[in-house]
Image (cartoon, rainbow, N blue to C red; front, side, top):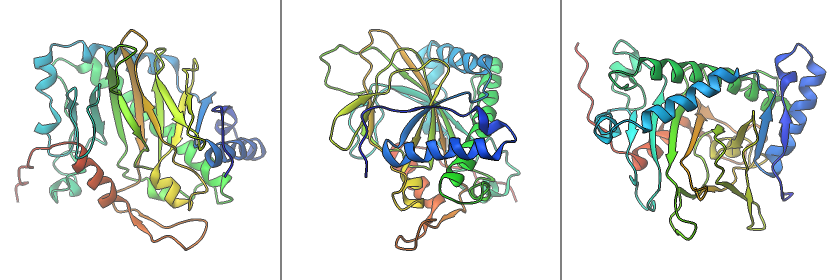
Length: 315
């Protein structure tokens, strides 16, 4: 497995064009990045700048709200892991984190069959009472990320020598999660991390970060490589599920965040996770047991965040 000392920047504009040769060339570059760093930047992604600016402004608006208003949306009051995650909340064995968050998933009402069945991974999102513009900005961004994730899935498939649409059937009602993250500034000599070294649970992540920096990626030599902000880009990283899907051909690389910029840091990760019912069968061989996506992601969420009991649906 080849090591890395920088994170590649890949212009993916060709993925939006009807040019199979150019798309194949971009997919090959993406594949090499996934096999080495497990991280890469994308430019030429087609997400309009106002959509990006809108979600960053929405995040700043929310985290500037009075603490009582944020606490009213505490994730502990949701039966399905939606809402506000207060500063310092931890799961089993997780150290103190210097961040707060707001998170949402696919918005589903009471008539949805999975909601009626009591699934803890399906349900409605939670919103501030006076946050119509906030909601519109996040839903617009969520839609844009869904479209971008579809293009990346096709590129991953091409890179693996599969039909371009190979992964699409696994993402028809996905467990994708969008999070707004706020890291307050911390002293340069502070030992605590915004987020400790970890890998992501799902298939892959699309990250928007502001200009503050602080994201670092660990290479196989144990050195931490700065994933400095690149204007107009997103950072893409492979998650544990995609590593398993490809039998470690694509690598899920440890990363961490410490905000020592002296100012607030905002980032917006979009975690691309397949459907609850999806069964992940390795595409490059048969040495790894299939993985049931839903219970795997659900176990991670249950360990990370509290939740309210769901009120039984009327019959």
